[in-house]
Image (cartoon, rainbow, N blue to C red; front, side, top):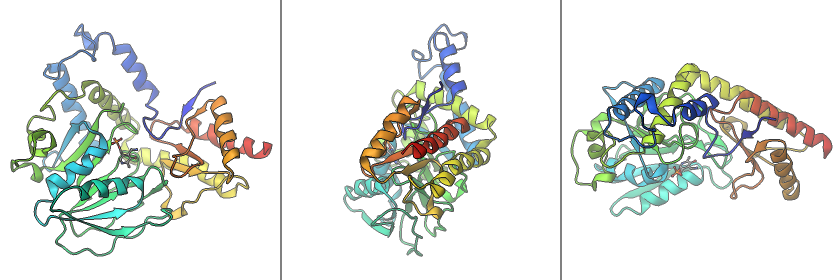
Length: 356
Ligand code: PMP
């Protein structure tokens, strides 16, 4: 019986990538070294870094003249600090859309910085089941920050807001799995451990214009300094970047972001269509705000939810427990979750409903 990992992150990786990693692990391309042992200054790693950077920009349809990818550490969470430190330098005033827990974490961290005014310009409070519109903004904001997909609440932007100030996005939980006009962003970032690689790597793609002037920020928090050294100001996470390159290659082979978006719609529709007609399971999320990648749902009774999670795990459907803030169940259907996995979950829900 195959098992499927519905975890929200670290999450499932494409099977062919895992197989390639296994096959190459002891001797990377005839170097006589494992990828786990090679130097970040080696020609082999330099080739991996260039390949991953180019694939990333190609998948996002961004030009290498205008955007620079960075491969950093510290998680998406460190970007909650690095983004305002590096970008809030003109007006010292920034706008945030509050659409869930991770938006709130970004707001909290920005508010720790002295001399910065952080305005929450729209909120999905109190129930966080919708994506509220962003109102017209004053022009004296350094940026507007949005979270494209709310991993815990299960909501996502279907269209990016039309921002009149630079747009910054936390794309962690639908990165390269949902189609957006990526060129609308001045900066986007994503923790890798959902859609791209093992934990320990964070992708930042920033307009190159922000990298031209050196700043006196501490170097590990400083985009221009990190970019100048191609993310290798210190030892970068070589293995994670190697896996990212393989996953990016796999994403290109699947047909790129548009194809993955279509496939993720097909997978999530299996679950949403079932929820819409179910007499046992339900979702609180407004249909217009439904996430393609994270689907929270419940039977409405904690004991029955617990039974579902346990029985599902016994049937090979793993990590369906919901986030503690929401409870119930959550199915994460990232790029590497096969259609067969979503189908197996849908069928299991159907079976469980009949039995209860
Ligand atoms: N943003 C979003 C949307 C997330 O889902 C998460 C992690 N679940 C984070 C930020 C934090 O990411 P990290 O653990 O990489 O710091």
